[in-house]
Image (cartoon, rainbow, N blue to C red; front, side, top):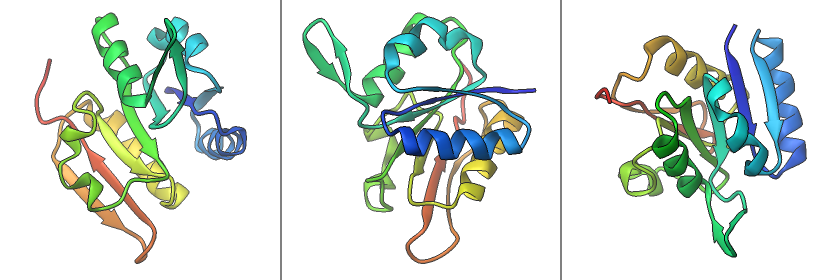
Length: 152
């Protein structure tokens, strides 16, 4: 059974996603602040991290991409890391490596929960291999995924 973390300061979003993923057989933990997650990141197979989560470190505000970069630097075997945001659009994700090259995938919060599930399952089963993919269930509901095409 895979262990998934949700790192997001929106408690309603965390509850909804946590409930949904548990229904599909995953162990899920939610973190409203990244500090506790950072101490436990090594326990997870995959983490969904909010793009704009407020992280306060040494009197500085950092964001989701900075958190992902830090996890990748600190852990020898980091979990798969998915950057998720309410603001991602097709235009923004034309070049996702410009947003956060360390992320294993990107998702829009406006996509259907089934698309998040599909992305999570695909990442966990493919073990960090693949190509950039775009899928849309309707005109306004879009998700974006980029899986690593290389190994570390």
